[in-house]
Length: 333
Image (cartoon, rainbow, N blue to C red):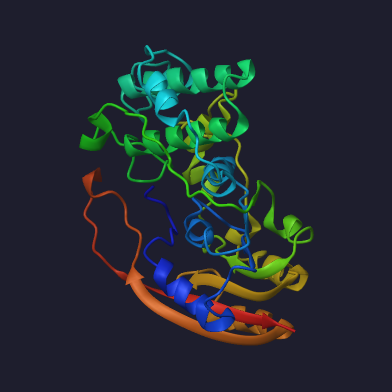
């Protein structure tokens, strides 16, 4: 998925930095990705560590990580289930009615056809779960597959804060449900859908990786449609963009971020902590250093990379620019 703050391009940098501190053999380590997003970092360590603990406040993120991290065994019926869902007749359900041009509103997050496809697949997945035709692992595998497949045909400039006036090329394609393939492992993993500052009091391990929101953008607002598909609950969408009620992170506010971050580090029962943060964040390098240094030996690594930019097909002009990504390192006392 094209995701704000995604660490996909930085995976090697993060891995090499972690290896340089804790060594290359992580087979007995518990690795926690506590602001997981789409789970890219946890997925990269899943086969290397004893256990991954994954968490995010957003439900769509929980769904993705419940599949990519917590699922460990091959799903024998994978192709059969995907094929059955792709053959369903269209349904004029919640997504079509609220987020498509010919629905009850003028919103156009998806083409009419794709809105109906999302509805029919989402309804059937829920029916299968209630009928116990699918188990919990299959449920989250199929739900993750739908989220990612729907995102590929969304009529947005990559985030869901607004939709485009005209259907872009990728949004005109018919949705095809594709499997969200996960890595199999012999060990089990944990996935949570909690406030990170609360969860940190309940868990412990060896490596804590932090990738909190950097600025005032709230993920619950930017990806509200994914939460709606994931939850498929009944509510009245608000305003032009059809917003739902969403979580507001204290990491997105200048007045609360430093207090929240300090408490997180203080309560972390992990021997090594790594924080990804860039030069456009609410906290400065000195802010982070002053907090982390209170709790052990501090160090800093950095790299430049091309920043996230909106979809090229959104009819906007974008200049490629570089962002300085910092990896703050703490070996706790």
